[in-house]
Length: 299
Ligand code: UTP
Image (tube, rainbow, N blue to C red; front, side, top):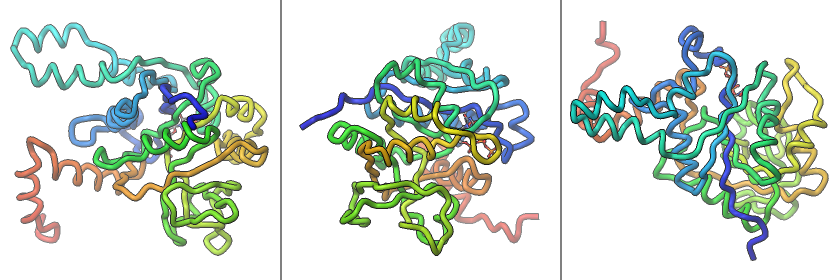
């Protein structure tokens, strides 16, 4: 039995300072950092559009106007490419424009992910929404958001994207407490509670919350009731925990596919290498070069 309507709206927070990528983020939003040629943000919008999202709200801040420029048609550039007969160029720039209807909200201060999501209340207009963090790239060959929307259609409430990161890594993440009797090895896990960055030896599981969420409209009142924590930031986990404890059905979909954390410098470079290696135009040559590349002999 389907208990909830299919989610068609997604919120993408992109108002953070991107301090780990200074100095380039002084002038360019980190969400537009290219993974080969396409910005990470476009790959994430693509992922949402593939599973039926039609409307995307970008939460941006001052200095992130380039995000709006990227997703809106550029009439002059299109005319120039058309005049040259550059159909590949035209298709490349039109792809992002046509993925969804775009909406914008401004977060004046980076007061945390919870505060950024709180800017989506009007956009959600009483409906559940998906939230996708543009730092987390899910390989297009692997499914996560689609199965999460299926679980939401069946159970409603909160649905989280989870990754088994093992005991060494769990203290860096929000962690879930599996419901009593839940099989932690299953693809879909019932969740009893949430713990932010637990110590390795106290972690209730090794299942970490990654940057994909489906949230019910009640999240906005819960966020308004959430007091700021460390760094005066409003934590999304705190608001989700309050709902979960008050009885909102909460489930997680455990992801077993390929994920790239483009918010981390080393992981970003690895993501570029992995995606370049299977790029339709440069992939073959890049793989050949990589096979011969000896970093020890370079300079
Ligand atoms: P991060 O904490 O990874 O991004 O937030 P950041 O703060 O920009 O990066 P660093 O740590 O300084 O390098 C994850 C996502 O949430 C957004 C960010 O833009 C990023 O896409 N975010 C974060 C907001 O929109 N508002 C905030 O207040 C905080």
